[in-house]
Image (cartoon, rainbow, N blue to C red):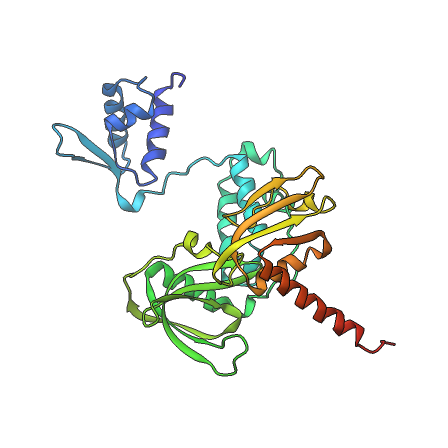
Length: 337
């Protein structure tokens, strides 16, 4: 680290403390790569305190060592410089989160970015004439995405309940069912999968996690009832045996993708258990341990005749059965005029 002036040291110390950190002289000594004497750092802290900054100093209990920190209400009053790459990432994030279009979450993201833009230093404004232009560097194509605008209040209430660990009462119409069921659940997180938004919630009676699709909710009420989680949702365990959301007993699935399509498969992660092998003819072999579900079968069929199931045999037979049924459907259909 090059030699820094007292002003530069003071600014760095203020930025560190404004994050809510509690720092000793030794901590700052390490931060400055041991190139600034401890006595100098001590004088800097006393100078900042004497200048009126809301610093608190108290004994740590280790000899004469003191810990320094900002009063709680002032922890974020000192702005942290924004870099061009950080500004660009913030605006790109807005474009990537199109699932929340039309919801209160989208409004909150827009409000946050307006505040971020106000903190952009003039040196960056010379490079970026209009900060929001950065967001237009990315576009997202979504096929079959849901419009979650009508569910805006339920999404916002869910996030509030997750944050404050409040029990929710959810009225829910399961897929293919006419009746509406009501559950009291403990919300843990939101899950976005292929354009669909779910609430991951724990049900104590069933001792299991439910995936509740927002588009099937008839209502969601945040109750004045706190909960302490009995179990935490483990995404790694959840993904075991699932290509996406549907679950079944995991088996070894081995596929061969032809040279004509292997470039679209190569380098993409389809499942954490996946292993790939390049074959001499340019084709690609993919192996993963997942359950045989409609989700898996639909994904394989989406590759048409460019993908062949090598194992297990029962998956080959299931695909053959479905393909025969599709052929019959079109062979027996009357000609359309």
